[in-house]
Image (cartoon, rainbow, N blue to C red; front, top):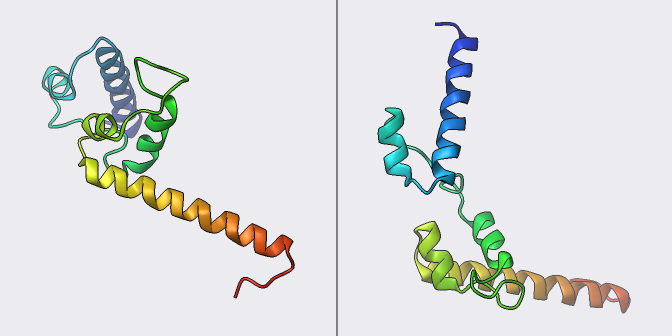
Length: 112
């Protein structure tokens, strides 16, 4: 089998998996159906960008009015709520430091 054949089959499986996932199938069901050992979630290596996207997307029942709760993000990404809370606390601290540094620069102070 050539590399082009393998690439074509991989693309076909990916398309089939995407359509089954959109139909509501679980990753385990899709893997079993496509005869592959396992399917990886896109955020499996690093869940943090997906958590930020979910938080910004808002609560499913109250879009545009409330942020998605931490417990819901943790449940969807299969990580602990504690880790999710810790991640967002770090982001807030980073933003706070950046604001403080910008204020110091505009005031003509050194950052040291």
